[in-house]
Amino acid sequence: FMGRQTLRARRRLFLLSGLVALAAFAGLYVFVESRFFSALDDWSRAERLASLVSQMEKGIANARAEEKSFLLKKDPAIADGFGTHLKAVFNAISRLSRMPESAAIRKQIATLRDGLGQYDELFAQLVASEKALGLTDGTGLNLDLKNATEDLQAKFSTAGYANLAGQISRINQEGKETLLSGYKLGVEEIQKRYQTLIVFLQETKIPKKRKVVLQDLLKQHETTLLAMINARFNFIEETQRFDDLVAYLTPSTDALAGFARSLRGDTAEKLGSLKGVSRLVISASGAVAVIVLMLIGLLVIRSMTSPLRDLAAVSGRLAEGDRSVSIPARGNNCSIGT
Image (tube, rainbow, N blue to C red; front, side, top):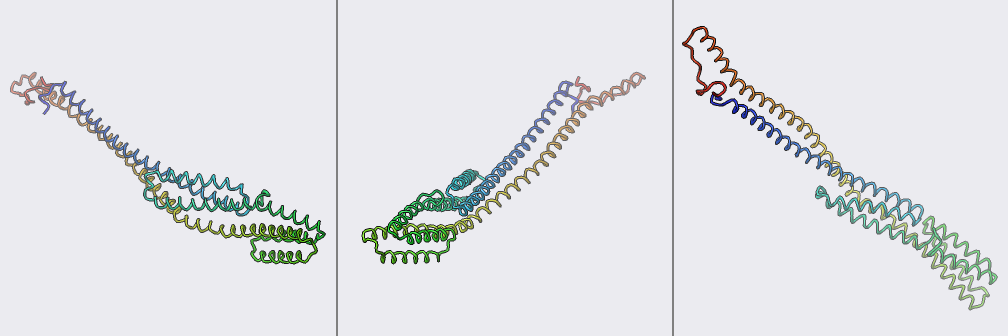
């Protein structure tokens, strides 16, 4: 069918075929590459989401550790570390909520944000309560109790009742033990000692005006000590809410962790699959392009060599004197289109 084509036209046909094959290969390559990089982006976002969930879990664990340390040591200075860890958790949750992939877990994210807000608020209340006691730095109620104790002991000693001053020390010791142990029955013993002390003070021969001052001081001492003990009891009761809050948060954190693992596994599997498919498709398409070019090249070459062989055979017969030979028609043109 190329009998009418010139040699130049055949060269152009081969070149055009090569360009078409190259364009087809390039188009297929771009398509496969876009699919591969899309899967790579999905995998990268899944990794980022998993990293944020991991940061959130780590931050909550660290905050829990600071909380346990605070409950054990009752040191308000620990609150700074707790706040730092919880801030990192809120930051991770905020970044997580902005990711499109997190649309399926928005409910769990909202639950976590709400629960952690309550957790932070409860911890802040306990820290404020402990600061108000002032047991670690000698301020607050602890300082008020110390001043009332020194004033009472000095006035009892001046009045000649050093034994009453000793009773104040005994009450302080029992109050300290009750604060440390959280044993509520210790409050009854302390209140009995105050009643006994008040009755004994009323029966003393201390002048009335001075006695009234001592009674007021004793009442102030009792009020301060009992306020400290009640604050500690409330502290202990409130700490139980931490476990309730963590139990409330656990299903949401587990759901986020499970979602992150699932998404990470799915995207990694898809990426791995596309890697193999990409290699196969690119290799196969490259091989097909080369084979097509070889076939077209062979066709073009044979369109010239086959008529030349016929011409060679006819020329030989003509040289031998055979004038009855004929050349097969090739569109009324020879092998080079002339």
